[in-house]
Image (cartoon, rainbow, N blue to C red; front, side, top):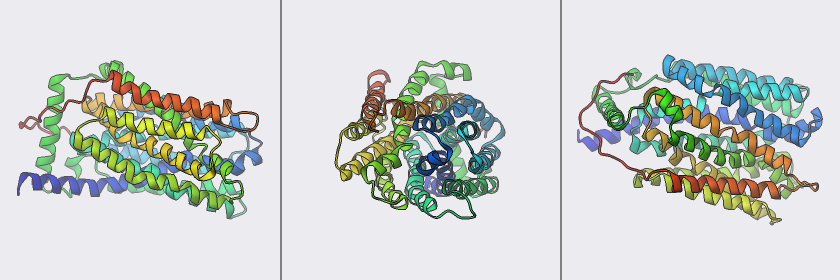
Amino acid sequence: MEPNALERQVMKKVAWRLLPFMELCYMAAFLDRVNVSFAKLSMLGDLHLSTPMYATGAGIFFLGYFFFEVPSNLLLERVGARIWIARIMLTWGVISLSMMFVTGKWGFYSLRFLLGAAEAGFFPGLVLYITYWFPKSYRSRAVAIFMTSAVLSFVIGGPLSGWLLDHPQLGLRNWQWLFVVEGIPSVLLGIAVLLYLPNGPRSAKWLKPEELAWLTSVLDAERAAQEEKKHFSLKQALLDWKVMLLSVIYFLSVVGGYGVDFFLPTLLQSAFPALAKSQLGWLSAIPPLITIPIMILHGRRSDRLKERRWHVAAAAWWFSLGLVLLSFPIPPLLVVFALTLCVSGRWSIIGPFWGLPTAFLTGTAAAGGIAMINSIGNLGGQAGPAILASLQSANGSFAMGMRVLAALVALSGLLPVLLLPADRHDPVPAKPRAENR
């Protein structure tokens, strides 16, 4: 078989075997993380919670996430992806279901913190898992395709959440019913991970010997080339200036991302006050639906041009433009357009961004470095809603908060261009190394 034909065959098989299942798992994770934004429409009144209390509870998820992220990813590297990812999914699924029992702010805060602690390590673990299977030239598009699941969670979750709120069952309040229905898939998928997900290429019985040989030789050659330039220990990776800078960049983009995520239904309700919750759910699906092809094409272009920094910057800047538009009193349809800019920019950053650390970190250093970037970055999920809530005006406007988020997101695009070295893609040595997975 021609070498290029073999490459296409292997990467197509790997992508189709792994990415759809990973998307399904992360869709469940992200839905459990942000469905509180729809529950908010009813839950606040039932539990006598204020908007700042909601913002605290929504964001405290990321404190639990922060404290357990690096240990979780190191354990994944040690015990294997299959067992650890299944453990994460089963734990957070049970906690998400338990949200139906919340009776006040302290229960809300506690379960949101525990949900973050349970989910810690899931996203960076899957990013690390992608490096086990995809050479560098495929990673941005693989991450972008995988991350469409988070966007799909809004496409599906928005209409589903709105419908569930309008049609409660079993004598439950509508927000309780929402947590029940949307928590069950995570538990079922956690069981499925144990049955379906291989730890790495050598565990994949569906790879032919020549396919396995090609894939492992390329991945080992890339790893060897990187370690010849600089081999990072775990401590060196955690203290490396590029890792620290990437953590700051990711934090700034996430501040804006979750600021929009946790208040998107509220913004649409303000723009379209006459719509029922189920109608708002359908309307909320428009920005993420448009986002999916944009983020895939953006990731593919980043891989094709072998460039990451400017692709991160471009997406951050059109995201920032959307936030600026939302800070003005604009017509309802323009609100939908501005939210589309925000959502598409927010998610188009992800693919090129994760191509940056995985280009210079390998092995345990990659596990720890990716987890630290993600854990520090996701503290922005606590800051974003808090900024919007604290800067909300007396008449309910989020204008000042949106402008602050816009400035932070714009800075997240400027920093990689100014401070990170230009992308360099050295040729991959032909000499393979024995796979250690």
